[in-house]
Length: 109
Image 1: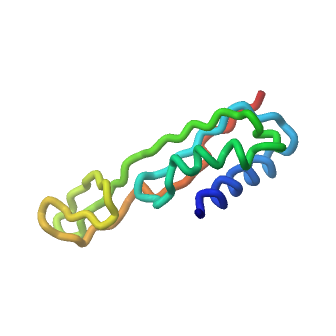
Image 2 (image 1 turned 120 degrees about the vertical axis):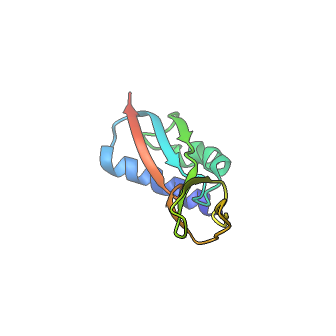
C-alpha cells in the first residue's frame, strides 16, 4: 500500500516546514490520473498524524480531472483514464494534468 508512504511523506513535509506548530487543516490536490487511492490516504492520515502537530487536523482532498492533448488533432480533452482515446480515434495523447499530488494549503491553529 504505497498510500501509507505517501501520507507519511505529506505529514513529514508539513512537520519539517512548520516544526511544532499545531496544524488544524491540510488540503491536498490529488489528480485523478495519479494512481493514488484517495480513500486510502483519508484512512491513513489520522493514523500517521497521531503524535505529531497534525494530530486531529482535518484533511480535505481536491481531485482535479485528468486532461490531455491529442498529438494528431490538437484537441484538449478531459481524461478519466490514462489509456484514453481522443474522439478523433488517436491514442497518441499527451497527459497535461491529473497526475499531481500537491499540498495546496495548510492551516495552523
